Image (spheres, rainbow, N blue to C red):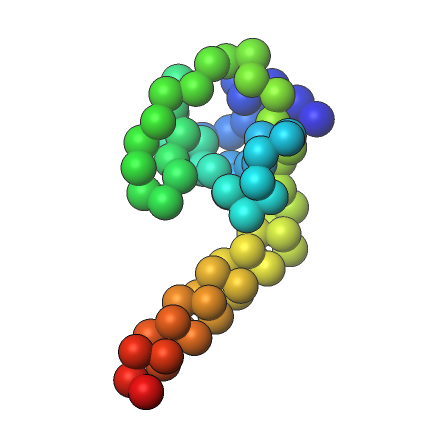
Length: 75
């Protein structure tokens, strides 16, 4: 575990105790994004940096769920 300020801009992370499906991305030294919405965050907030494999799995699951939803609309 690390602090938000230790991340590099562009890193993906989770916040311990939050829903594990909530994946954030560091946008600046004081903001992150969640679902493309810019949000302020404290420098000392504890975060868990995601590995490249975890990021790939997240996007695979995200787009798979989106595709399933779109296909359900066609029925």
